[in-house]
Image (cartoon, rainbow, N blue to C red):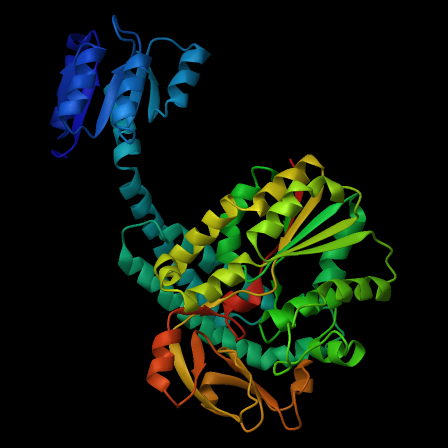
Length: 517
C-alpha cells in the first residue's frame, strides 16, 4: 500500500490527525494542507492517487478548488467531504465528476471504504468476477455434458456471452483463455447437435422446433405489430449476440425491453439466404419455386438481396394482413442521415422496416483493409468498434425519434459472425460458390470431419445450383481454403470475421422487443 499517495485538504486538518495516523498504519502515504490554493499547487507538483477535499474552507471553497484540480488533472479521483447536505452542493460536486461524497463527521472506516471503492475497485471486481466464473465454469461444463435441446443451447450460449463481457476488462488473461477453450468445446458439441437435428427442424410440423429465419416474422414480429399503433423494425445485418448486448445499454436509455426472443438463423448463415428468408417467410427452396423473379442462386450474376421489400409485401399478402408498411435499406451514411432527418414522415405507418448494413460492412472491411484488421483485432475490439459506430450513427438518432413518436421498437439481425482461424482444404469445379464458411457446387472434395455435408440440398430447404450439387458447412471457427496458393490464402483470411457456417455465434441470434420509456 505504500505506493498509494493521498492528499487531504481541510482547514481543520489538525483535528483529523487520528484519521491520518489510522491510514498511515494501513500503509497509505498521506500529505496534508489546510487551504485550496496550496492544494492546487501540491497537485501540480506531485502525483497523488486520490484527494480528500473539504467543501467548506475559507478563501477558495472546496467546489472552486475541485474545479481547478479537475481542469489540470481530469482523471484524479476527488472525494468531497462536507458538513452540508444541501442538494445544490451535491449536484455541483457530482457535475464536476467527484469520485465520492462523504458527510462530516467521517470515521476512519468510511475513509478506508472510499479508498477501496475508488482505488482498489478494479482489483476487487476482477477478483470477484474471476471467482464467480470459476464457480460457473464447472456448472457450464456439466451442462455441456448433458445438453440435449435447442432451449438449453440458447441458455448455454447466453451464459458464455455474459461471462465473455464480464471477463473482458479483468487483468487475468488466464481466465479469458479458459473461457475461450470452453466456448470452443461448446461450439464443437453444438456442431454435432445441429448435424443431428437441423433437417428435422426444417420439415417438422410440430411446435417443438426453434424459431427460424423463415418463421420469425409470422411468429414473433407480426403479433407485436398487430398489438401496437406503430412499430419500427430494425434489422442490423451481421449483429452477433455479444454486440447486441453492448448496444442494448444505450438503447435502454430510451426504451424499456419488454421481451427478448433468441432465434436460429437458417443455413447457410449468410445474408442472401437468412435475410431473404426473414422477409419472405419462406425457405430458400420455396423462394426459388414461388418467386423465381426475386431469387438468385450463389453463382447467378447481380445482387442477391435486391427484393426484400417485395418479399415482405408478398408475405403480408399470403398471411392476409393489411398493413401500411415501408421498407428502407441503409448502406451508407448519406442515406442514413436522410432517413433520420425525415423520420417523422413514417409516423402513420403500421410497420417501418430499416435494414442497416454497417456491421456486415465492418466485418468484410476487416478482411480487405489493414487499418480495420488493427482496429478489430479480436472480439473485444470488434465489439468496441461496433458500439462506437452505433453511438455516432443515424440509427441511434432514428431510435431516439422513434421513442418521441411512441413507436414500438424491434431489433434483430439475420445471422452472426465468427472469427475464422482454422483452414480446411476444399476442392470443387469452377462453379463452386465463393463463401469461406459454406460451399455449394458439384464434385466437392473436403475433410469429412470438418464439415456438415448435405448431398441433397432439398433435405434442408435449399435449392440446387445444378444437378448433383451439394452443400457443405464449416464447423466451429474453420474456413475453407483451396489447395492452390494455400499458404497465401490462409494468411489473407485467417483471423477475419466470416459467416455462412455452423457456430453458436452465427446461428443463435437476438430478437428484442422494446417499448418507449
